[in-house]
Length: 519
Image (cartoon, rainbow, N blue to C red; front, side):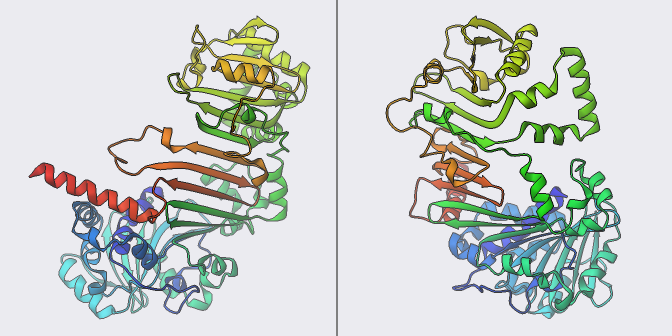
């Protein structure tokens, strides 16, 4: 269904390009498209078109080749798309309302999803006149209280006096039956009556998402099979909700995710995580040269149970255990789940990585490392130090090294295991000696902000694809994740201009540059 949503997103992008308003409602108003979305929809995404257009100052984008290419692509999907995009107001579209993506689900066959886009109309007569001009050759058919055009290729457009609904599916389903469901839905019966959804969508945010697993609770076994969720108990499908908001602010893009799961599901989820012992590794890494850092807490036993729930994976692991002599219980008991990872890029040296994992049972940890030596993965170099043979699955660039032999090292002590290809970081860890100046811990990574995971990316050190991002300069991205939510922030170098405007200014400058090259 991702491909369907991607195709539908083409029109939404163009719609907000030419939408504008000075103020936007902070509650769900009359005529809002949520009023016809069925109450069992598992996912809703709302685009605040007026707010996005105002922030991005996007009216000037209409004259660019970029916008023309969007219109051209959309016209291939649906003949009515292009005219609506060129001027939605002249096509009878209410550009002051939010645009919604929604999933329509068949609980009996959960993977039979239809992705829809719901748009409010303010002049249905004008919309139908537009169709006369652009949809010639297609038959306008009458449904139950609405009109529709079946464009084939699992693509349908339906409308009444208030709403326009585009529907797509990746499977052959009865799309008219699904449209009947939408246009038979009244506001009092719709998803808009869900108080959790109303709370999420009433906020004046740029892009909002709301999702629930509750509709799949009617047939959880089919959902488990359809989506490969074999590690989830059928009892956990009801009453789980996620809401997310993406906002473009001056100099940054911010993502906020709130999770509201049933108590028993939260208890199970908490078993995947363990209490962290402290970010010792990250206190050994200088802030100046860090490229990426992550500090998280996972339960080895919880992860093992999740992975082992899949029969195919379980059979493969069993074969590996028999051939290698590896005992999974040793891994579960030997290591805690406090994992820290960092990549380090000092000037003039290769990008190296460092990984640390806390040790719960030193004897079992030694047994696992000894097995690695026996299998040829490690070479014992004395004093709990080992050379990593970077062939096979350890040959990728993550294990670059500034040691003379080009190999990373492993150090095992009674409370932690440490791997790195950077000699300085390795000696800092062995000697428990922090470098002078600011380190990653406490500034870039602060575990007190959440109990599950923190991450940092130095975007200035990232090698950008100049074909995609030739102008935008980023500073960094931070992410904090806990049991009840996630917060992420991507900072731009220019902190005075709205992030969305910066993105579209780049698009316009690229188009101008291409036009000058052609001339």
